[in-house]
Length: 236
Image 1 (spheres, helix red, strand yellow):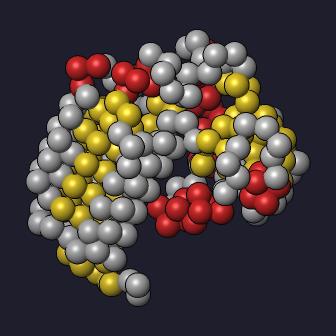
Image 2 (cartoon, rainbow, N blue to C red):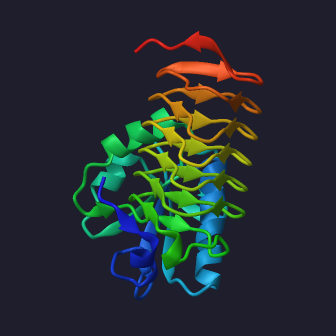
């Protein structure tokens, strides 16, 4: 992962703060897509200049518009763009989000990190963001944190010092990750679940809603309960 600290986004040295009406589309026309449309509107109200053109999704929505924006087509249509275009991938499942990103192969597409304007991130915090991160309102991040590519932090999540969330990790609302915890690629943490300090969660693991991980959890399992215990293992 190429590490870009939040200060680099903040100062405009990368693409995430558009200079003038930069076009952006949302891939994913479901509930998370509508939340991302709201996030973009809130960013614009705070001084950004995103021109939100509409939604793409491989599953055609029931109506021609979503949240007042048009449905524009499938991933194949998006790959056919002839101009540079920002994309927010609004897919909640870690594995599904990774699959979509693999499909979006056009060199003209790029994936800015989008951080709600009321989430506090300063130079001193040293928070590294990968491309495509989505950080929703109410999240609290302390210091010396690394978020990989396409990490999703839903409303009200907390991430402690020195934590590492690798690519495609997903935290659902009010999830908490303690200091120096490490979540491997594609980990999914359910609503109100907690990973205590120094715990390691293996690749592709799922921590169920409300669960508390007090010991390391291996890859490709689902763990539930307090304390979290393995419920099932996924085929790999």
